[in-house]
Image (cartoon, rainbow, N blue to C red; front, side, top):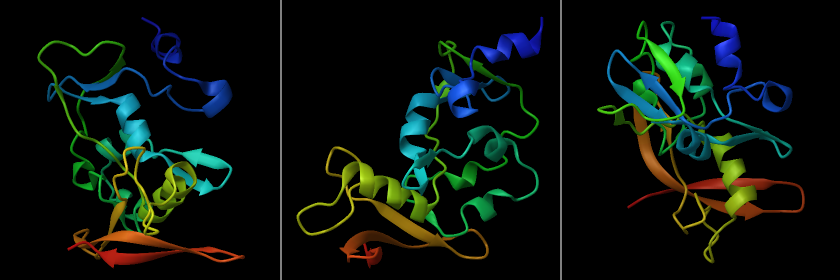
Length: 175
């Protein structure tokens, strides 16, 4: 089997230099899977208003050196599953079109708080009270800072304050 030829069908190299985010990333060792379309939708962020990105799940899931903490240095979207970092290191992984029988789909999302907030602001906007929305279903965006040990701080919604020159995201602790 030519692994390069076989894997190429899962990439959209000409447009995104990334996998297509469809199908499933399966972990044959643990019999778990990530729905790639769901992962992509919940992890999308903006580097700038013109550049949408998603943190690649494979390096985070398989890391050995603690690099995830740097990617999430400014905090995390509340949906983020940063505790999964490194949990698939050394396991047999594959991208497949159909979920294998007996595999558990896990919740997986890696999204840095500020860049995800920018994406949500442009994509979903704010509610009537000026709070940032997280999706098209009127769910409020929530984020948390991470301390030096990688533990989450207070969960906050973000109140958006727009001026002529910038947009401020003001954390308001969730009660």
